[in-house]
Every structure is written in C-alpha cells, then in structure tokens.
Figure (cartoon, helix red, strand yellow):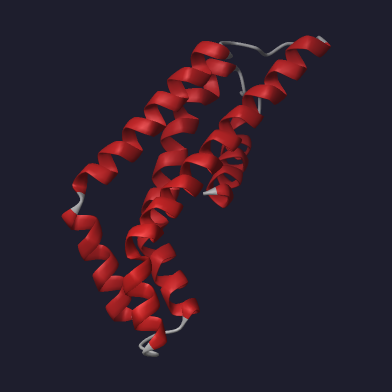
Length: 144
C-alpha cells in the first residue's frame, strides 16, 4: 500500500493541471449555483422548494463531477491495475484505500471552497451557522 500511495502521489505531481481543472470546476459550479439561486431563503413554500433545489443541484453536481473524474482516471490506469492485480502485487482493497488516501485532501478542500462561496450567497445561513456549516460540509465530503 505504501508503494501504491507513492505512485499515486507521483501521478498527481506529474499532472498539475488536474488540480487546476478541479479548482476551476469547483469555482464554476459554485458561481453557477449562486447565479441560479441568489438569496432564495424565506418562509413561503416556493422559497423552501428553491432552497431544497439549490442543495440538490449542488450535491448532485459535486457527486457527478467526482464520479466522472474517477471513471476517467481509472480507465487510464486500468491496464496497469489488471496486470499488477493478476500478478498478486496488491489487493483491490489496498488499491482502493491508497487512491482514497491520496485524494483525501482534494475531497476536503474542494467542497469547502464551494460551500464557502455558496453558503451566504444562496441563504443557507441561520442563527447557529457554525455547526450548520460543518454539517453541510460533512455531507458534501461524504459525497466526494
């Protein structure tokens, strides 16, 4: 698992544009949500539906973005993975854990960036905003 982690870290260092693309995607989708759902908070049922729609749009967009990113990356590594797994160099679990450990900083950072842009712009705030902000971020982290 240590060797897999080192190799995955080397792959990330060789492709710095991947970080820029993820950062750009996070900013673009946050700005899109802000434009669509600017200050939707309110007590009436329409505002509550808009509020729920903004949360749904944000979380599904983040889930799909990360899912397609994973699919594209795995397709590039598939042949190497199949060969090394057939030679019993490591298990599927070790590959999965090492990939997730390397991706953990981006799984923490990018939802946080999006949430900090979206939270006050859309109107997710309440009187007790610190635990609420953490809960929404944790939900987004679990989806990535």
